[in-house]
Length: 316
Image (cartoon, rainbow, N blue to C red; front, side, top):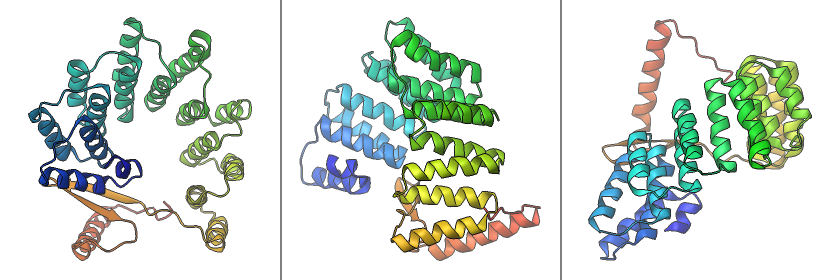
């Protein structure tokens, strides 16, 4: 079951859990940790709550692994209050659980809660790690807290001896980019020890795309692609960036290169939970039983929006 969850087949893992229950087998805390992780990945809150209730009913004592997975499940399913309750009532305080709490709030852009939790952790005598700082820097980025972000980034090495990694530098690029400081973001990248890491150029490319800076976007795109040319995802990101600037010749070149190399990106999908049942919708896939009804509804909604003055941006 855990193996399926780890390779992204969460639905299969949950199916095995239900089969295990039907066959009279009693799950242990490892089983529940896998179920909570699966529900977190699929963002299916009701099934997660059912698993939580079953865990309590089975009177299985928790440990750090299962309790952390439970808290993470609630945060990823957007039930932040329940996630916080798990932290306060069931989790022992350590750097792992504090980082999980801070990351949970950070996933939803809850900047105030991230900063408050971070300083609560420091007040209780715990030292932050790479994960903690990444969550804090990301929160500063979402909140537009440029000065505070710089302060935390500087303190990583100065106060805690933590060497920032590629994702930390990317978070700082995103922070500057969101503030419209693209020139500063570019200088930060080229002078950083992580300038050969694709994630920082990807962050700069995203910032340029959002602010319409085509010249700098071309530089970022060139470096972004050069560092990891064999990734299908990178081709798609570049194609979308060029499309946002209306550079259709470049888009055609990217798509042609993908076709010639036989490269394909794994299809994206959306998932919603209705009446405790998960429904999956894969891109360019018409296997859902109500596909025709859904397409008709989307067309009707689009017509209504256009009548109200909405003009779709097909370049996105």
